[in-house]
Length: 296
Image (cartoon, rainbow, N blue to C red; front, side):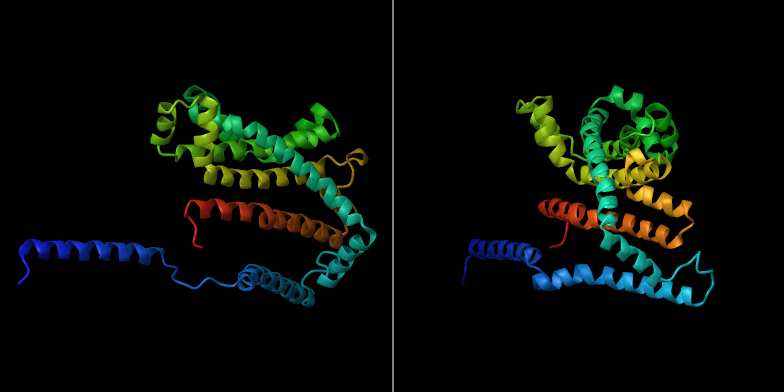
């Protein structure tokens, strides 16, 4: 007959084994890893299906003649205009003019908004003084800045970049502030105890720990910079500024050419979706996976 202490030891060992087994069960994938082809298909096919459905609805509405042809052209008419831009190479000129402006403006905005966000998050006086102003600027439509920027800088690239910065900087800064506010207070304290200075604390602790919120702010900042750019190109139209997508859209409106207008809208939408899928979605996936915040 086993002694009482041996029975207790056996029971404790079983409890430990059960606990380890439970933890292993939590780490075990509930589904088999899908093949790379199936994952790509799962990511691509739904948006393609939604686009096809939208075109079918558009074709059906056009077939009812609910609106005259000059107000609602058929998908085939718009496709012909789109293909004409591709054949002549004009589409690449429009895309290059607008996209490179948006990228340059976004990078400058990132360089301004990052230290601004750190100051807002860590210096109470700065936050109390200009925090509400930065939040208010985020809600101000970027198009409101275009007339002022035109008066200040004329019809130049500086006007375009000024409007882009005023649209993107508040969003990125506020995203970083929100990310830093969610950091456990113990982390910056540990850095301070270990001798990290202000810059080292920001580089090695605050920015990495606030990365999910910072990334969300960057996504919103890009969206605002893209919208601001289109508003600036649409209003501040001039031959000296080159032909961007906003200029193309403005020309379509001036000519009362609805196929041209819809083609411009589709190009702007394609750029927005492409940047999201190529840049921000992979960055977000890597960031969340590294923190165990996303299912594999």
